[in-house]
Length: 362
Figure 1: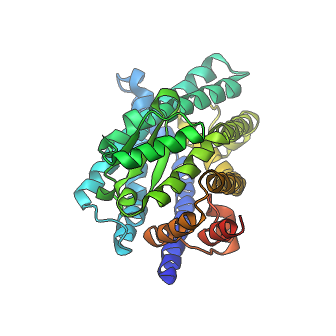
Figure 2 (figure 1 turned 45 degrees about the vertical axis):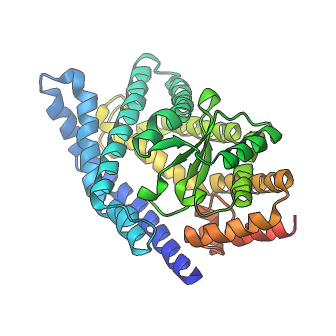
């Protein structure tokens, strides 16, 4: 089983690295060839100048989607079926792709529209104002996630197991976590991996149990999983991650503010306000993301270790924690002991063997 998990992980991370390189090549060629400028010029000559930004984004997004479709299809459909991690039909996969595409387009349209609006009226401090708007918008999305976005992909229903629900609510009370309610979703129609989450902000905060987990794990195992999720809230990890991401967002936009003239000149562009230069902003975020990914992964692993420790303290269910880790590693084909470089760049959770060892020594 572990050889199979290693093979799955190696393919997955190889595709991820190749996908990033491929994306950077596509964007560079798009800018160097003058296609970006050509699209803006062509759209500007129509009677739909007020739709210039939405149309440009739509055309570029569709073109990009078609160019990366082979990577996307293999990574999220073929690979998952090859390793028996999903039974999702092809038609349903395409429906999800369409819904994800529409949602992504609308979110990007809002963010980019705000970017150009603020850039126009705040030429000296736009980087700060844009950062604040993007950060605020990400918090709004986190609040809307369980009530607007997740229901578009999964069917919600209140947890039908009354005893389990009571146990979860008692645990939440013990750990001083406010929970709206407990829900289960039909995760199995898309993936056979196990998952549980504590999502939402304020009055949208709720526990979500995937049917792939609820039906295969005993009460003790589910309790220790959710104790881990509650520990993240108790330790204010969400707020800390928002702070980290806010600093990164500020840093990227400040870097763009200070260096955009030089980078734009490389592609024959004169101003950041030129819509044709929008892909340059994307390049900044991709490159900055590559540079900061190890740091973000390190911080995330640190948070996960702390949450494991608090979960064990709150429940005392060490054996259940260990059995849960074993089950999850098999169900999700997790690499229990990855190469240090793979762990350094990609693992936002400690590897399973490390988590079990820490639990044994707790």
